[in-house]
Image (cartoon, rainbow, N blue to C red; front, side, top):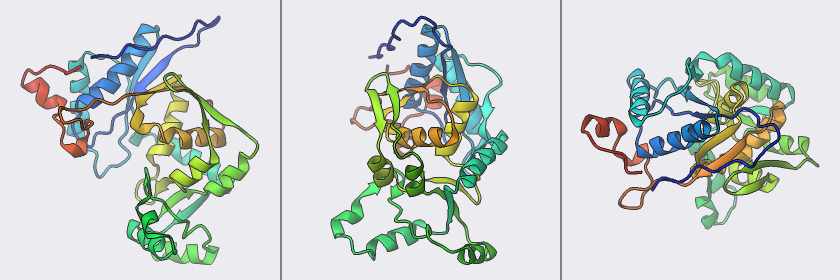
Length: 296
């Protein structure tokens, strides 16, 4: 059953409502994508606003042109319309570089040369109880900060050896910078939310904001794009609720306004599993080519 779109409280001057749907062309869309896109689309339409489509194609190794073309065809089949031109993240790397430079000038970034195997090894050798080793952040194994204290000489040597690296946000320094501030956001379903230091540092760790081969990350690019496109309402699935904590922090550090959020429930299949690319969920392409209809 289709969920009703929440109504906004009456306002004396209603700001322009702009929503977006931002899929990655790393595979074909499924019904979960269609549901989320329609939630954002219908919210904008019912409130006289604008709906934007954004293509999150920063990972050039996994993103493919035929998947991107299928996104346009699938969403049109679902009955959605959007503004042109569509923002493709790969065309705007300079925007992300400028944001990284702001954070770098504030001393909030450091290069990390650890692989995931290195991170797991350090956790295992850190003396933690065995049951702690299974505690992962939503980003993967919680990074213990192995490279946070590297000297300039060590960093230069690693760069000289052409070792792959990621640029991480130094969460300790970031939290020092926001000390005394209360970072909040409004969620239309869950109400007023507070981004807490314990959640940011303990759950997300020093998040990756860029890599040597991919000069931005989901966390950085989505915050920059929402700001530059003037997104007023971010409507997305509950699986991204945790990410809003770090997005709120980045908005503060970069001097951006904070959108209103809504994290909607997720569609599940007949087995109770949520639709996902990694679960090989039936694609919208398959459904439209075989005359099937959406299940919501």
